[in-house]
Image 1 (spheres, rainbow, N blue to C red):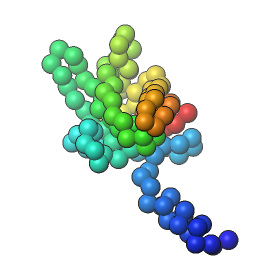
Image 2: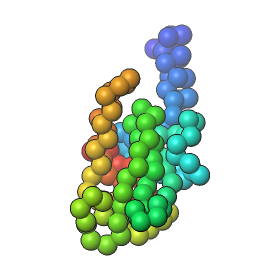
Image 3: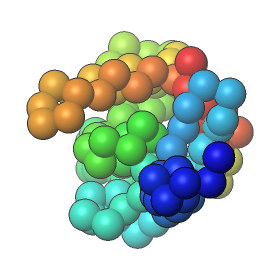
Image 4: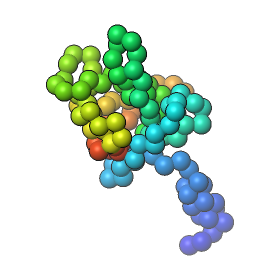
Length: 121
């Protein structure tokens, strides 16, 4: 049924930012800074900090708007970092990422970065 309420809800859904959900991977959007207020869900960039290695800066793929730094290490898994396949444009990072946020909007995104896409579990 196409009532005004249904049309408005459908339009709002179409205008909502894309986000990862089970069965719906979200490609990483590469940006200059994932810390910018207008960065979309799943936006990311690479940062290298002297003596601390490489990090994937990202905005949570769920749409909560929170950003994080994820330490990665190419090659074997090491303590304190996620395993990264070395691909800068379509990375695969293991193990899974658990993004938990308690306020103001709860978030409990859990998934993987696989071939440059956020994949929700």
